Amino acid sequence: MRRTFPSVVFTLMWTVSAVAFGGGGCAKPGAKTIPVGEYGSLTGGTATFGQSSHQGTMLATEEVNAAGGLLGQKVEVITEDDQSRPEEAKTAVLKLIKQNNVVAVIGEVASSRSLAAAPECQKSKIPMISPASTNPKVTEIGDYIFRACFVDTFQGEAMAKFARNDLKLSRVAVLKDVKNDYSVGLADFFEKTFKAEGGEITVVQSYSEGDIDFRAQLTAIKGQSPDGVFVPGYYTEVGLIARQARELGITVPLMGGDGWDSPKTIEIGGAAVEGSYFGNHYAADDPDPVIQSFIQKFKAKYGIVPDAMAVLGYDAASLLYDAIKRAGSAEPAKIRDALAATADFQGVSGKLTMDANRNAKKKLVIMKIENGANKFHAEVKP
Image (cartoon, rainbow, N blue to C red; front, side, top):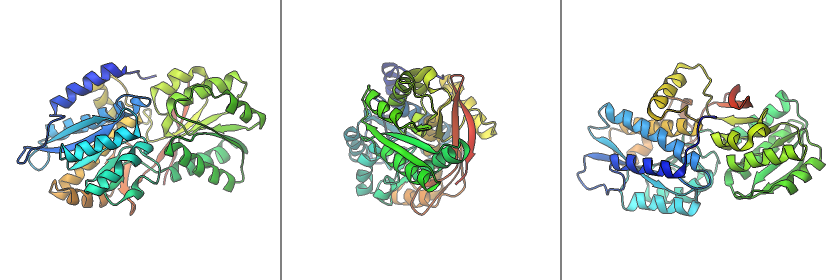
């Protein structure tokens, strides 16, 4: 589809960009920059998530600095790689807060890693905004934790109603990743809504992130003869599951959530993911001028079409910078208050308003994989 990005190459580019913005340096008293922390999976099992989000964050930062910065100062982004591991995410955030004295933190994409790091931001009263962690528990950690994306209660409900009412499915199997809070939560919300809509969950099977053989679970699923399979996992496992499902003769539609949004889904899954559906935050083929303008800017800088994680990285950073501007201060408490008061902020992924629980209320799009590409299929409003 759009591209693959070897980790070694990206890590080199990330290092260069971080140095260019003063990354890794300590924010000294009287410094002429506003230090903002970022942590993400630049390497590891879900590296495309962190790499894409980082690219979006840096594009937003370059734009705000080119326009004169904030409060008369340039924004300095200090980035830490958590290697796709929750324990490293916590360490990364502690370093950003204690050593780099950041005034706010952007991250993480994956819910499990946000859940590991967010308590440190809450404890230190440093606002954190996750670009894409959709598990509801993330913002329940405290009043300094925000997100720039919808939550899985909405995503699970939207996908279940789509399966039941649009695809006319009545018997669906679920295959979830029990090591990820995102997958477990999304599966739960999907199951509840699908049953409430009159559908039947024929069987629930599970795996753990990093597994490569899913034939036992898929054989059990095939034995129940479902007319659809919901797989709320991340792209590497999703691609392998799709291939093995087709090898075993499972031909029914596969469905999932925003964890499918990576070029790797189609690269690994190949023809096996054709005709599948997944929930997402934006569609590159949406003619909306805001989206098309962003795509042109992103392509001019990086030479590729952005995925949803790049869009959400850009939106999260832009949202934070807008809050600092409205606060008229880089004090963390005042930034927190401004983030909480966000209303009708125009992001690339849509208009965004923070609700009382610091979750973004915004639309969801349903994508269909056709002819080796992700295509817009439907839109669901909150």
